[in-house]
Length: 96
Image 1 (tube, rainbow, N blue to C red):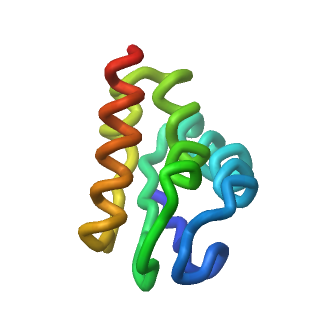
Image 2 (image 1 turned 90 degrees about the horizontal axis):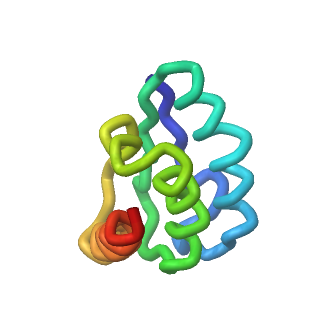
């Protein structure tokens, strides 16, 4: 299992979708393809944009299907971040 601490890369407001894309391409996908689970640690993050979360995980759902969500854990998300994650995951699941 690999843990990615997002605060160290994005600060308290996760909005940069280019950073999210880099995390997805360079860390999440290689970890998942090696058979390991991944923890996205949202500790100390106050808010995230929908575009950030979309860039972080939507391509994974498109590529691997809804089952990929069983391999990804979202840790220490406040209520606002939880809502954004739910919006993105539900939207992507409707498309699959």
